[in-house]
Length: 218
Image (cartoon, one colour):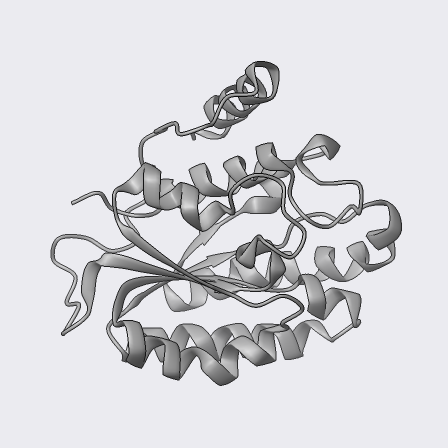
């Protein structure tokens, strides 16, 4: 619903070279005031993922978790690890949930799985395990589809295209919100750096705005 507005805002960021803290509103609940968070903090969000989340291995502007914190007013804890695959996230989500007790957790994997040509079944099973761990912990999980890949990483884009429909289906199966970054990025090559994998400053802003839409502000 807000995709066109987000794209216009981000293109404005490119043109003006601004710092980029825009509020596009919310088009999804991702949990509500009636949500039972247990002893978790609804004002805390964990971003779990790989180098795209970590944002400092191949940087271009602040990583998207920092931007989400500015947009949402919530505490956003960056738990991205460069090079991590979905199996790594599945193995450590329990300790992350126990340590930080977040109200929300953003689960964003698939890039490294695609590079290593892991099967869609393997990746979706890992994502399902992560979502179920969050739900059992009374933390609201939010999934993301994978970004497109170009140039030196174009060889892995076929796997990305095989993962994304299944990520959407998993969201429906579990009743989990999905940030559809494949659709948010579209065919705009400018949202990725020269390596065809990591987001540009503008690309990070697209991710941040899209995720912010899925986090309730109350």
